[in-house]
Image (cartoon, rainbow, N blue to C red; front, side, top):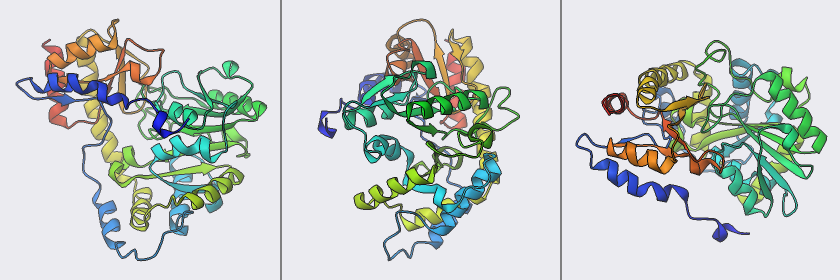
Amino acid sequence: MGVADLADYPWDAVAPYAARARQHPGGIVDLSIGSPVDPTPAVVARALSAATDAHAYPQTVGTPALREAVAAWFARRRAVPGLTPADVLPSIGSKELVALLPLLLGLGPGDIVVHPRAAYPTYEVGARLVGATPVAADDPGEWPEATRLVWINSPGNPDGRVWDVAALRAAVAHARRLGAVLASDECYAELGWDAPWDAEPVPSALDPRVTEGDLTGILSAYSLSKQSNLAGYRAAFLAGDPAILARLLTARKHLGLMLPQPIQAAMVAALSDDAHVAEQKERYRARRNRLKPAVEAAGFRIDRSEAGLYLWATEGRDAWESLARLADLGILAGPGHFYGDHFPQHVRFSLTASDERIAAAAERLHAR
């Protein structure tokens, strides 16, 4: 299979509902795609501006300053001490990393890539791109023997599921028994809402309580798009098993996958400043507190959603029917069909809209 064989881009199917929502007298409230709407922090923008004299090719491995900043961030924010620059590799956003990881690991026909049942679709795209077989399974006991890569997503997109330390330990142990790489997509880790994640950090797959000091076969992917409003910067990184990272580095050198030097400088600034992260989290908390009761008042049941940027909800009917009802209120959401075959009656509401648009959505849902 090649890129030309991939299915049509799924979000194109939402266009008629978006057009319908735009007819609302108060305008559309787009809660479909989780693209940040708040400003890039000034500390980051200043660092980018100061680094614009980037006349030389950047190194694929990243600057020492960036890799050191990532390691320090893991120690300070994720309770993962002891990482070295050899344990870190930057990427051009996290989506290309997710899509290309099966290729860069050398997977192909006959190999299985496991991903969550409610899943960001790029996990499956990456598997199909190399002719591997994607399998949706949350329970490690359901992972097939031919599994070579396991994606877990904590907090999950779209469902907000968090894997606690015990679940992560079990997943790592099972992946190692299978001889599989376990890749943990942790891009929403700063956004914990419900107990216990309102009071303690969402754990990483690299947490010493999970690894017991052994990073073998474990990777953690992270993006600054959500915590720092850097989606447009394409700023992300991978950390974990240094032997795997060395293989990925060689492949990425051949492919020319280099993060621009000014972006690397901006990432150092973002990773070194916790104040803007706390401010952004409070914005999302206020939006969630406004939107969640309104969604429930409109007849939806919210499942999981204990962390992350979304409300994962159902009113017990096909998601396309729910999208139509919401579109008549001028609200656009994401259909569960896009996140696998297991949740056709769910919709995803994003918190990435302005305060004014979230308030408008809440008022319309209450007055339905």
